[in-house]
Length: 369
Image 1 (cartoon, rainbow, N blue to C red):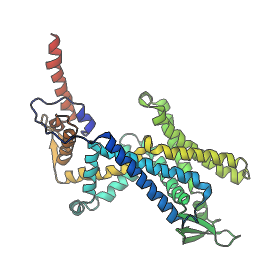
Image 2: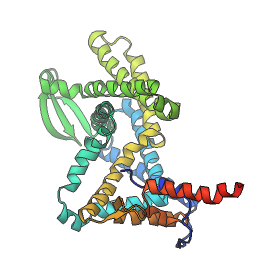
Image 3: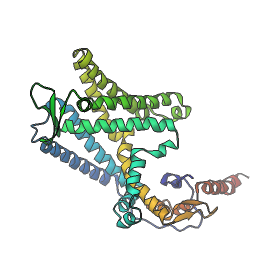
């Protein structure tokens, strides 16, 4: 059954005779922008401080990776800025607060101690909700997701100077991996572990390319996707992922088979594509990567409501809509937005359409007779 949402409820006409509460005036855009800018500056400053301290006062920082580090600072600013703007909206703010409240609720933990790890695994990790739409889309999304996670786990700490790989013998194949200057493990670059350590980004690229290519092909062929897609929002992210992955693999190909031929050009092309993508993340489709973890708390909020059998029924057809707390949260959002018909959150989507059609026939069409 389709869940009610703030956007769906906001599109319905007011129910006659329903009282509405008058909420406080919404926060002005200037104050939101100020808070978002301040949050971005603070997060960027904290990242710079973490880079300086984590690289042991820049002793382990590779100056060749400076463009990547600068792009990551911009990424931190953009994510903090847009996240602050996002949760400033009444609907997002309510969902955000309810999610965190459910996340840190000891009562919820006592009633369902395994709910949170299961939701993290199924909702964030394996994204089972995508499998209901299409198994092919789910598989492609999994390839992109795990490829990007692997690439981020390798690239980010290496760029910040937190991870270093140094030769333990000076001339032999032995290497040491250090985190913040402390030795974590030693390995032989010629064995399987060494190969995996030095080719982790290649593995990530091999995962991302087929996943991104599938979605790019689908957006070229599927009529529904073609109708509503936008080039900058829907196609550019996929092209960027493919360019990053292909140029990364070509760097390895150049160093192994071409003795470094064309390496400098490929390195610059790879760097430009990565820097562009990092800066693009907060302001494009990739922002859902940041939003998705916040939805886990909301899923937990709805799950615990169902555990209490607090399922709200439609006032007209008495079909179950969602949990009682979720419907009340939706009504509160509509009151915050001064929509004055928050009672319509108590109707299922089908009954809303029927009532809206009846109102149109009785009030609008009647006027033409």
